[in-house]
Amino acid sequence: MAGLGRTGMIAALILTKLGLSAQQSIKVIRDNRPGSIETEAQENFVRFFDAYDKRRGLDFHATFPELGSYYNKWKDRL
Image: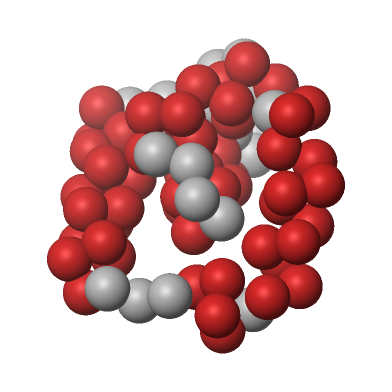
């Protein structure tokens, strides 16, 4: 099935930028689209990207505050 591996990985990366942990992001994507993030390498990329991003100290919410408010509005549904 198309659109599961890399697409799910990118969706999980977006969720990490919105404040979820890598593990939470992977779970949300897989719960909503079974089969997503197909390989261990894809899982590891989400984890490593999240850790790298946190080490760099980038404040995504300060750069894109409208996304932060959108996430806060919908986070209980995740």
